[in-house]
Image (cartoon, rainbow, N blue to C red; front, side, top):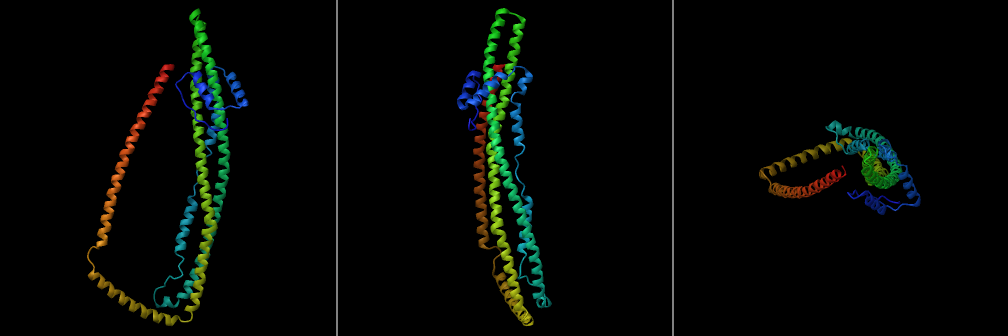
Length: 360
């Protein structure tokens, strides 16, 4: 039995149901022998039946408890804070006032050097954090591979338990018919009681096998979940590797270039600080005059509302109406689909209730 196969519930007799399962599963000689052994070992009493297949179910529960997603919030916070600091790493920040302009070179360079040292440490910290999470994700994926293989083994083991139980159920049905025939012939109270006890044991075994089938479906559904978690981890590992290999070195390079340019600018500013201050004042006054005059002229000529604003507003309104219509149409379609699914669920429930009533 080399792969997971979907198990279908049926309202047919135990014999036909057993044949259907056997057709859907290819057993090796060793597995067929194990099925025979398990079927022969089933004792038809309540304690033995309740314990039947419990070990396989327990392994499934333990396996599911180990699957979990990873919380990368700490790294995300570090990167977000670092991005804020990187954006503030501006060698062209302008001090205010004449005195500020004269002292501009010394203060700006010192601040920039201090910022560089702090940011370099933060970048290295983020890189180490990312590498640590990458290693953890890779280790988790190794665990997920083991869990996937174990889950496949549990699935196969449950299948063998179910096949053995169905086989024993078929045998028990034949035994019950013989006991019922004997009780009808003899009318003996002991024979009637024996037939009744066997009937109750058959019903209990049937319910137990249904529980094992439910667990088997859970095992089958677990496989793609484990693969999805692993794929997500692998994608994050690739993203982290790209960040550590490409992005972080670019950050450092950019900061180093900015620091070199700041040193270069300091050498130039040291030669003509006073002249630069005078020229800067003249330029700023003329620019402020120009800017103010132009701004006043534009303000006096501008309408209260720009035609572009009206056009953009109308586009937004039309787009909103289109989206609302699309959402309403999608909602109607989903409700229609939901009604169809509800009808299917009701029919399935009715069939199951009729099946339970027929067995009672």
